[in-house]
Amino acid sequence: MKNILIILFLFTNLNGQGIPNGDILNETPLYPIPVEMTFEEYQDMNRRLTIGLALSSIPIPGIVHRYAGERKKASRLMMIGASGFGLMIAGASMMSEGDWPESDYDLMILNDGENNEKRYEKIPINQVGDDIAYKLVPLNKENDGSGGGLIVVGAIILVGDIFYDWIYGWKMIVQKRDAVRYKYGQQIQVSIEPEINPFAQKVGLGFSIYF
Image 1: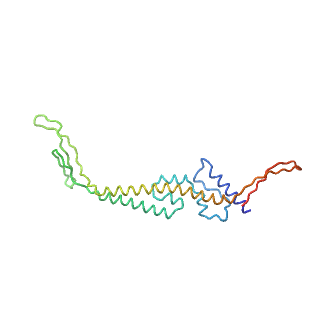
Image 2: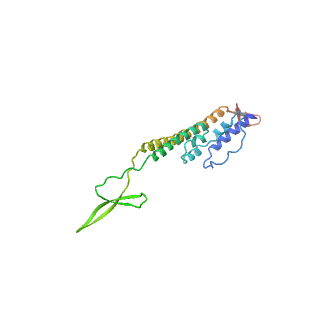
């Protein structure tokens, strides 16, 4: 009886995996489970690559590995991603405002009295007699760029961490599913033998399952 329950469980699950256009959020139907199958193996067998792909739309490091059951590695990836993001913040905080750029034109300086200074280049565009018309072009202070390197390094760490989580997380889902199915699939042995009964005038096939 135990062997028959194992066969029913494996065949129904294998058949259910191939249903096209199925709702990935549907609960797996309740079937008898082999007594030697652990809860972790049961979870691995029911993980969906489609869900792993959908989680990739959320740019959180470690999210795919966490779904794959790799919680320790997911935590490490989260910490690496957080360190990369921290470097980006530190670099941005170091990007202090620099000096005004030099100009070959006369400047018009406006100050509203609250240290909010604005400068404009007075570029001549027309002259009638002694009257000269100018075009005012605003000037902006140049950043010193001291934190640019940290921002680049942090961005590389964060993006690389996310891509690693995606690629190896998908691979882990597939490997774990295959490992469980291979392990319990090896226990199934099927033989088909023809059966002929000349007295009853019947011909059939004998279907046997061994473990």
